[in-house]
Every structure is written in C-alpha cells, then in structure tokens.
Image (tube, rainbow, N blue to C red; front, side):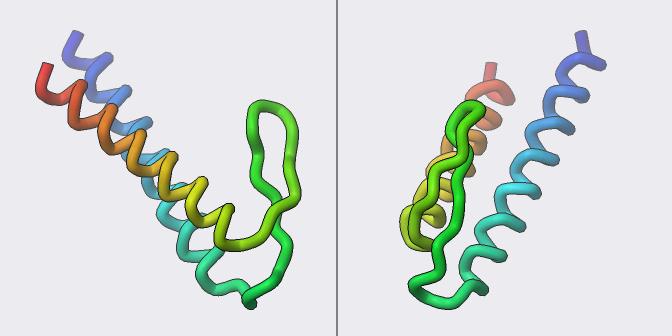
Length: 72
C-alpha cells in the first residue's frame, strides 16, 4: 500500500510541476495572444487570461486533492 501512495504522490507532484510550467509560459506570452486550452479531448481557443485562470484552477484542485489524500 505504501508503494501505491508513493507512486500516486509522485504522479501528483509531476502534474503540479507541469501545471506550474504551463502557468509560467502563459505569463510570458504577449497580451492579446490567442492560446488553446484542452477540455477533455477537445482544444478551445481562448485568450491568455482565461487560460491562466484555467491552469491555476487545475493546480489548486490538484493541490487540494494531494492535501486531502495525505491527511487520510
């Protein structure tokens, strides 16, 4: 069971790193630049601010799930 928790924790940390890099990359884009966000299997064109919020929401959700799983 410990190995499962470690693997799951490593996976969550890796996803958080990917989202942190995505947030940094989005912040480096010029204002007004169109970007694409993936929802399910479909990409949607949007502007940078909406994409930043989407990534931050995913990051907060992942951090919340990691906190909840570490306390249980």
